[in-house]
Image 1 (cartoon, rainbow, N blue to C red):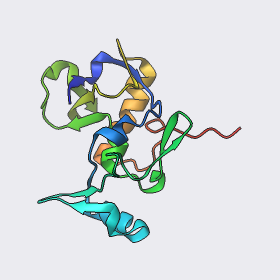
Image 2 (cartoon, rainbow, N blue to C red):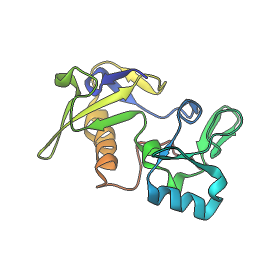
Image 3 (cartoon, rainbow, N blue to C red):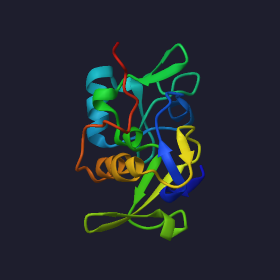
Image 4 (cartoon, rainbow, N blue to C red):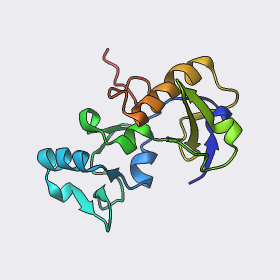
Length: 161
């Protein structure tokens, strides 16, 4: 994993590549684990020494990722774990990955530090666009803080024609 400060990102949009569902183990909060096991059974999860995870499929991917043509979509949209809702961004109270000046993000009275995982192919580098900085990134921050539950800009939306 390699992280860059948010101010190096011009824009972000999920391109449904599924790399996030293939490359990372999803850590679950206990309430998320309860909800998943209630609907899908405990066999879809696994316990580590100090964490709960979604159990990976035999190919290494998340068992809830569904492939349609050249797209990958999450089968947990209504109960998507917070780790998935927040990816590829990390919102922190301290500048963990360096370059604090470019990672700093003001949200109300809070000073946070936001970084993007460079593994995500949906990132577009450059000077942040207004929409990204003031709407998309704000949604990621609010999801992390728990002041927002519903994703709009920070997930791929199926289009109905």
